Length: 170
Figure 1: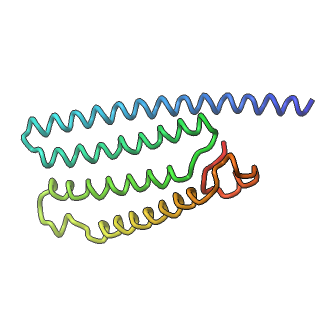
Figure 2: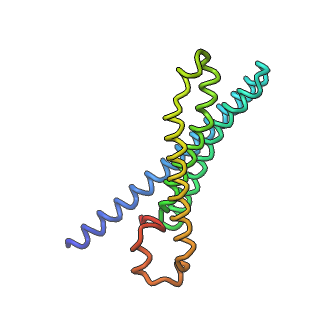
Figure 3: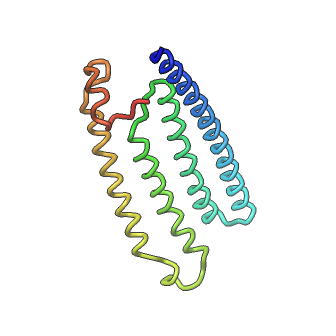
């Protein structure tokens, strides 16, 4: 009797998890469409105001958000198909976010006007660069360890779930 209850509970939890992932996928698609709309509007405004350099940098910052959403959608597809969520996705999203911040920061400085020393914070910018370097090294270590490990078909089952570097089993 207890195993029947547990089986039903696990089945209900799996069904609920699938519903959550469907909602998450829809939210990611909707967010992507909204960000693409914002990108198009930024390009249109920059052309209309004849301020192409500033508009291009603003639009590029918006495209980095699209890149992040694209990575998350690809990870969601992989999770739904295989049940594995790779840790490297978190690292890539962090890297994209830092790259976006490095691009958006100078645009904010230029558009803020005023005294450059009051607006530009070299310490903050240096920390962004250092964080990007650390995330880049971490990305290299994780992806190179993925390449060194054997294909999943050839690895014993206990190695599939052991490292946590390749992914998180769902």
